[in-house]
Length: 114
Image 1 (cartoon, rainbow, N blue to C red):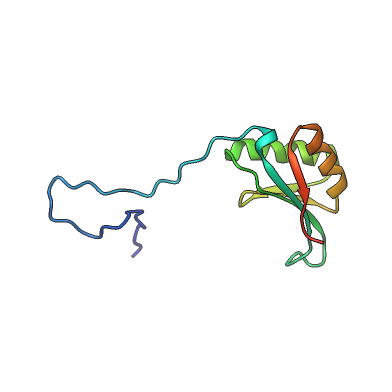
Image 2 (image 1 turned 90 degrees about the horizontal axis):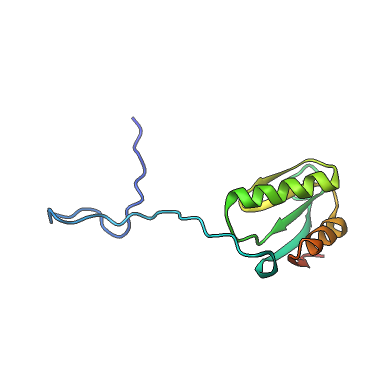
């Protein structure tokens, strides 16, 4: 027997026949212009069996736009990668190259981590 999780906010039950529940809708935010984005580039090796990946975080916008940016970065670096949990993951250490690509695309970029 499985229960469906309902995203009702604050009210468990009401006897009011005219009451309508407030639902917690996950609305996607519109994509900001590149010059308003504040992206962070870091190198990560944790839980990746010693292999390093370049992480790009801080993107604010639609999932489709994030995937499009990830596709551009993967093709320009010539490597694989993924877009998960609002992060772009590029296989290998491409921090400098990705930083230059994003600066050409007019994004505001900073290196994060050591």
